[in-house]
Figure 1 (tube, rainbow, N blue to C red):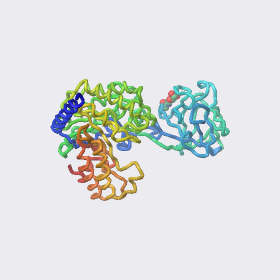
Figure 2: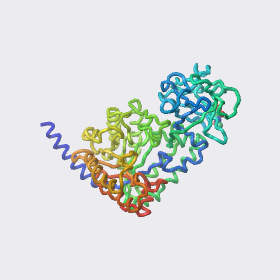
Figure 3: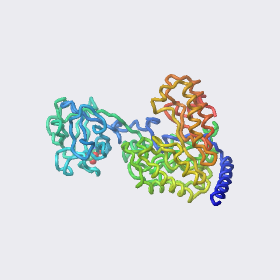
Figure 4: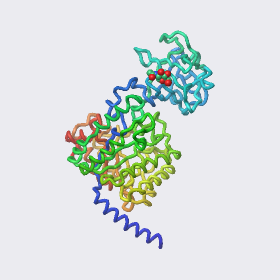
Length: 500
Ligand SMILES: *[C@@H]1O[C@H](CO)[C@@H](O)[C@H](O)[C@H]1NC(C)=O
């Protein structure tokens, strides 16, 4: 009886919220303001162009080979003990992640997350990877050969160079000849195997003297009111704005982040109101990183967001909700972009989603709360149950026909068929008639087809707009601006690839 009247009540409620929802402009045709308040170098390389030693940013993964031994350096067991130089090939244990101190000094983090340093807190000369703290004994200067920057020597905190005298002995006690020859045991060839270009990299790369000016200039020029005018004239009625957790601490966020992104977000709300556009605030980067990607503002690519970070992350949502709840342009707050399974567990994320939802509801009963599905091995329906118990909730799914070799094999028609069939039915699964709304919060017209013509792109974009138009909350293109033209909705509209 009780559950029956509850379900009637909730049915009435959902009908009511559906009607109300229709009144707010759903389904939205939105665009992401990516690479604006959370930097992404692949979309906007010019922001990174003037960083000194810009190939050695935070999170750069390097492998070091001794030409004398013809062997790679490795953290034995992946970390927790000594370094050795006995590996003929390189993978995880032979890879070191840089933490940049300045343009020439670095910490090196190993597979098991310890930092390379000298034994006995820097008093010994054996090179080990045992410290989780990383202080002065874990700092190395990377000295590059002037005419061959991937030939390096590493100067340790004791002023001496690291050497691989034998395969089982890596020590920081070389004070000999500084030639660059193959026989010098302190010479290594350095291969860069992964780089990151996010907010951490750009701010720490420029450093505390230069970063504030460079970032503020970026924020005030990359997106302006003119862009909102362009959007409203071209059929866009909402923006999804990625922001980072440090925005809560504006104007003095923890280093290396710099203040000023809050002012830019305030401006966006004003411009949105002027041009009749709704705003979705999207917490894109959370403390510790929820996915290890550049756009999570990770320092080194490790995914470390978890239970201990929930309280601080909720406080960021609380801050954003309090600030914008009464703004007429606010339509939704997205609690976390692209958490990655299995590192972010369903259990921990559910706790966070419930607490983040409660934080938003302290200030507004009308703003939507968006829950992002997890990337990786996770069911697309895993948050439907949680969402059904909450009001005005949206499930966000991201659909890219990229990032898997499966897509590269598809021709034009197969790509379009995949949208019309597989994507359509996936979307239907997260669009229950009596549950949360659905949102394709990221998609793009770029794909794996080589040498596609303009007509191919037009058909592919049109197919997606038709299918994603069935999402009950709407969709958002990734992104508004991007040096890679097909990823730029502004470019696609201006060049007649997409018409809304
Ligand atoms: C970089 O940092 C190291 C270690 O703190 C310091 O000794 C060095 O002088 C700094 N170099 C530059 C170029 O600032």
